[in-house]
Amino acid sequence: MNKKHILFTTLALAVVIMCSIVLIGALKDKSTEVSNSESAVNEPVETQAIVQTTEVTTEMVVEETTESTEFMNQTKNYLILIEKESQRESVEVFKVFKESKGFNVFVKSAEQDLLHIEGSDRSLELEALLDQLDKDLSLDFVLLIGDPYDRENANPQNTGGIIPMRYLYFFEDNHNTKFNYDWYDYVNPDDSAFNTPTDFTYALKMEWDYDEDGYAGEDVEMYNALSQDTMILKFLLGRIPFSDNQSISQILNQTIEYERSRKSESSALIASGILGYPESIQFNNVNDGAHYGDVLSNNLLARQIENTTMFEQAGVMPSIFKSTVPLNTKNFKVEIQKENDMIYTLGHGGSVMMFWDVDVNNDLICDEQIPSYDIFEINLNGFSTGFLYFDGCHTLSIEKDTDNQGTRHFQDLMLSGFTSAGIATTRETSINPIEYNDRVVSYMFVNDSNLYAYEFYQSLNTLISKDNNYAEAYVYCYMGDPSLEIYP
Image (cartoon, rainbow, N blue to C red; front, side, top):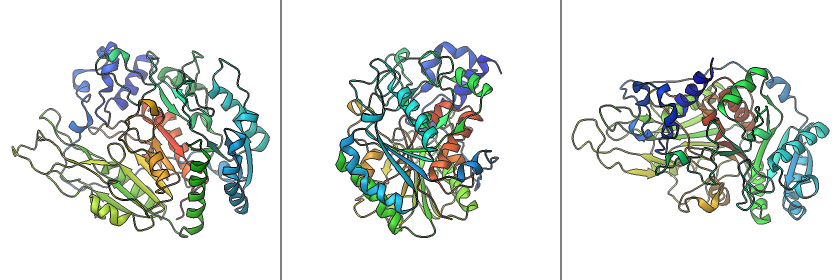
């Protein structure tokens, strides 16, 4: 496979952006590599997806990873890394609780243990510290405590916090950096920036900056690195993305409360809506998030985990996938009252679904103004779930000073008491409804593990190592306690 082929592979998997980001515009210098028929994919996702009339059932089957058995024989060594010694009190109750469950818990602080040299990359210093502590303590679980972002110290390599996230760049010829969730610059496409913050590089062993140019994760260097080495899971890692003691204590107490009151057998709720309808004769596809909801449902059923599915069953073009309950806000409110251990949602911003109710021209072209509905636009007081997989564009807020203030993010749902752990995204996510590409959720719960975090990191490993879908993988992060399990 030559360099040109590698670049095209990355493009083909990333060109359709769920939140109407025309990603390919940033790569106009490579336009000769993409044929006219292929470039037709490069439209906002609302214009995409194949119109079908038959019921479809999907199931993901992948080979089991070689290191899973070894990792599952864990010693339950658990590191909590706080930013400052003043945060130690806020994690003490959680530490005692985990120890009562048989974990060996170690609390370290960046203030005392992370040596920062002025001008050096703090994310590399953090990686070195975690690797040394793993060597000394044989870690199975790592929980980072702290807001990863500090605008004053943010730089092209990391988000600037005391315990930062690392920035990954999936195009080798674009090292632009913006401290903003929005990749694409519509006014000046050459200024588009694809730096993507994430934590998972701390957990997965790989030469992320293989060419040592200071910009990690580029497509060509990743292909070269993976051709020389195998990505290995070091430990399971999560983060509490708050620095104030009150929020830290609240999230950890919610985790304890869930663990103490949960059922012996887990159940899941899956809500995936329509993301876009046919917009023209040329783009005559429906972008149906139920494709991924159905894959997840079947993966869970194969593990004997009961789940309720909610897909769009109304409107001009309902989902081709049949669901347990029709998807709408009223039904969602009913279903979240049923003590689901896990909830998966896929929509714009994680929860906003498109709904085409009237075809005015009777031509199956959605040229009307499309209404939408937000399944989370309800009073969530008193409702909760152990684990929320909040899938969609930019469901986790990192660079807060440039963020949409009116947008709901994973942190908001944590502080509301709705969840204490889950998976969320730091940037736009991509779906190609002409040929649905595999995503992180496609590989969840196929590795014979009850640990959410294990399934997550192995899914990332597959998406990066086997699918070479870097743009899709880089946006995902694990929030909360990495030792949480789902019980068959």
